[in-house]
Length: 175
Image (tube, rainbow, N blue to C red; front, side, top):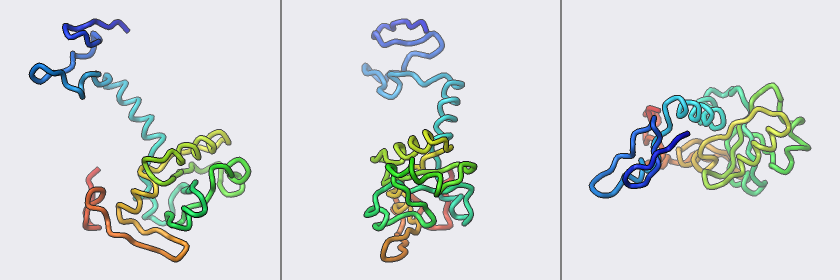
């Protein structure tokens, strides 16, 4: 792709407008211009093929996928999504075929957005021939959004965190 240098020496392409500036300083957000719409659509479609929000499907009681918790036994006992399958990432090569149906896509989760355990579990499953997605937010956001979870001592239902979910169950975030 040909790039031209603008007066402030930031690269721009002939198909992308120069980044907007406020006053004398350029916009940090637009320092790298947005991708062209078709490229952005392809990237966003690919992201949706890899990541998902499972709450609505799990609320039906019969999701079309197994949900895999790849965390340690101690983490599982501390709390896990009801109905999840406990499958440690290291055990995937030996146990995945016994616990999962290759005909059904699999969704993985770990602690939360600061942990790449779901990504590592998804990679291990993909390398075994499974179709996979990762649950957005992991167990942390499941709990923060006020969804029930199971522990070694029994079920829990936390209050939703007002920064992550509508406070009333009847409300919808609109997304």
